[in-house]
Amino acid sequence: MLNNKVVLVTGAASGIGRAIALVAAREGARLILSDIDAHAGQETVKQVRALGAEALFAASDVGKAEDAQALVDQAMAHYGQLDVACNNAGIGGAMALLADYPLDAWAQVININLSGVFFGMKAQIPAMLKGGGGAIVNTSSILGMVGMATGPAYSAAKHGVIGLTQSAAIAYSGQGLRINAIGPGFIHTPMVSALEEDPNLKAALIAAHPIGRLGLPEEVAELVVWLASSRASFVTGGYYPVDGGYLAR
Ligand code: NAP
Image (cartoon, rainbow, N blue to C red):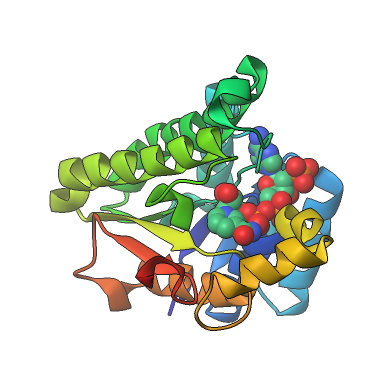
């Protein structure tokens, strides 16, 4: 599905980002993988290469505009093109009701989860247009559509990712660049493992998904890779849940 396409993935050292890298590798992509965790990022590179795909790792902080530009520059220097970008890195952030939410935690979540996607696309779009277009897939969340009492910053940031995605799609879809957002439900990754340790909370999370379980990173990656591929040639400006029915209630 992604034969020879150059695919950039942020947050590729763990969870959904690693799964995107592995599914894209299976589908023939050449990868530029990034994360703040260089050690675990190199482990993803190893797993990708074991599938016979080409990959390089570049440490980068999505919360810094200059890092986002340097990452795209590295992709262009190494591969000479950029076809797909998956702006996936994110954090859960502090959990507290709005009136108690710490100001520094708000700034951190908005910087990484929302400004990070803006910085990423701002650097990626000119490079992709040079090659005639491509596809961007931004990781929002079910909490980009609905709220969570203890996650006001996370939910606000993920709602913002959908607005950024739609605005960019309107601006660039006529130039061969498709831009979409995905909305995972609760997925088994290190980000939610702390929540899963409390058996009552875990049961409540499972009950919120009509399918009767949490999702797997690979199940999210399948959607991302399809959206990134030419099989999704008429799909742009959209938000696609992959949530076991969470939003259907
Ligand atoms: P994860 O397993 O924690 O992976 C996220 C990766 O991003 C980690 O390697 C993390 O490094 C890295 N990262 C954190 N801050 C970064 C920064 N400033 N710059 C670059 N990399 C950074 O989480 P995940 O569950 O795969 O989440 C991936 C994306 O899916 C996030 O945007 C998340 O909001 C979204 N999402 C997740 C779920 C879920 O239930 N898991 C549901 C909906 C949406 P460290 O580990 O060192 O922090």
